[in-house]
Amino acid sequence: MTQTSRLALHDIDAFLRRDFPQLYIHGDIFSVIEIGHGMCRMQMAYHESQLRPGGTISGPAMMALADVALYVALLGAIGEVPLAVTTNFSINFLKKPAPRPLIADCRYMKIGKTLAVGEANLFSEGGDGPVAHVTATYAIPAR
Image (cartoon, rainbow, N blue to C red; front, side, top):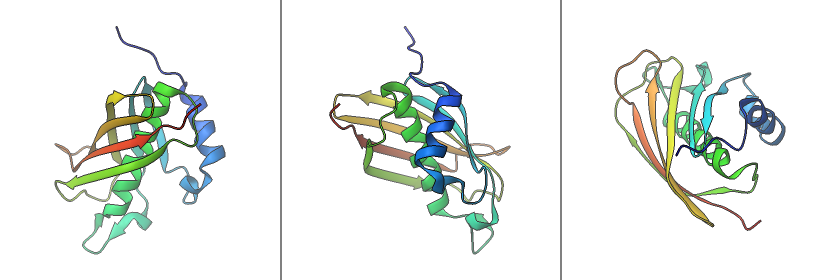
């Protein structure tokens, strides 16, 4: 049985804008496309600040997308918990992403009482195959 998200798209958008305004310093870069119980699809619009020498999206920009998207996916399962934090993050860069929007597809493999383990695949919009793969663990504070 599939569980539904504890937060609607408009709820997560309002939460991110209120509690994480730094995500929007270059405008509406991050947008949640879909949220479910422990899953999320998120887009990071292209902005020139994301480029590194060689004309590709930088690693830190890709890591930011993955971290935010995995956080959103977790909130889809546990609700609005601002103090859930990343405790481990590992990324494999698979190919150079072109300077265009990136999409993160995330899902959680396990969500426990105090820890959650998830993964994300990042794709260049219109590209074929993932540009990066991420695994991460988040600590969930006691309620």
